[in-house]
Length: 570
Image 1 (cartoon, rainbow, N blue to C red):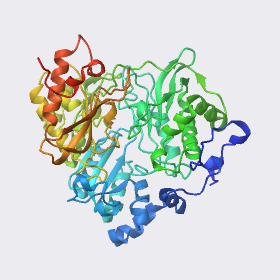
Image 2: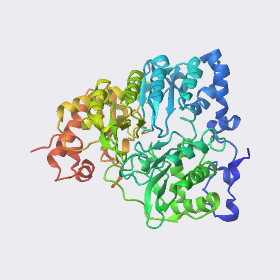
Image 3: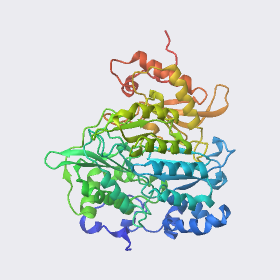
Image 4: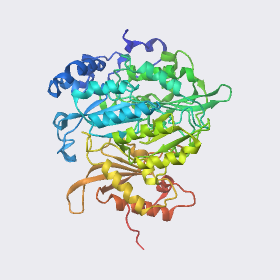
């Protein structure tokens, strides 16, 4: 296929901002790789590693894997080596990546907003129990994530997943990462527009396509037609959000340049109206700008948000319209934001008279046994299947009205619940040091214990408070936009020992009043003291709040001594 790096005729049509120094932007002529990651992608399209896995590495074993594939191109097939046991958080930044490699893999399966029917759920369960030591986590990007995968098993796993329409393709890497779709697309009574068709078309164009397999870094997509903005659109590289034009009717606004990690930025809302059948064109345009103008010199600046920060949304829109879409977008005010984004937990009526049931595991951690059992429940009750959510939860679709309570009761028997406490409903955690080579502290188990303790201490909480726990600064669990965000790091305890702990972010939010959480200067909490700290802050909020005041609003005005969890002097 033609080299698409130079498709835009920028010099002829649109004045493009030029940085003070070369940033590796292809469309400006800087095509020589400026770091080892870019060199590796130039040496061989990462999509080609699939055949080497199938026909070489899976047959010859782990030791036969080329290091450039193992720590680079394997990611395009949804595979990362997991953290070897025995290395504490202090070793994370001290050792080279290969020293932390285990001989097992994390494998990420993308679902991209699709409905997982009984067969698909059972297939996911079987892969876990047969090849992954019964591990399976629901991530906050509509994925199922396994651990303990051996390279010899990968072909059989792929065959099993593909038999039910699932794939690990480009679930990681500098590629179109798994798409976030609304879990209630096409079924919710209050939906503005069903974007399922557009999301499927984006996937058809994007995946296994060399035009998009070498992006400067990861590229995250979200699409929802639901008014609750249930896919965290503000923190994605590109998001399509349901809106209504007074003349043209339902369509989508376009938001670009969101992302968290060490330089958190919220997406820019372009204030446009895009019809359903042009959404994929707009996605290709945004992805094309990122491919051609994205910064490739430094990995730390190779996200779309940095280009938006330099260009501004007006210049970005100009380039998108003139050089990629070759037409103007229709102006339309961005849609009204919800007070808080929807997670669809509980029992809700669909527009067809059946019901969907949103259920919560604990911090996304389930297992293959649970997935298979869920498949059995879906079949027994004649439901359509389940979708995963942007909050490490799942939604079962198409339960008959007369069966909803019985179905909810049966969910409890397999370790899920449609009637969770606030703490179980609103707590997320990343993979953490158990398996992740970037992590510094334990997250999943620590968050699970925190949920259990807070359920005891605040059993009747009358408001929503979210807790997001992350093992490192990369914010995979969206630390900065939670009511209580916890970023793992090593801290000093009262005896001067270095122990696991957290930097605290308070009052972050998405939705009506989006904001990054407030950090308290020089304030850290040990992991051992976390239960008491959260208890102190929540207790202070409950005592000091005004009528109807949400946690984030209280944090914005609260005395710092209350936020530090310290006793208030008389």
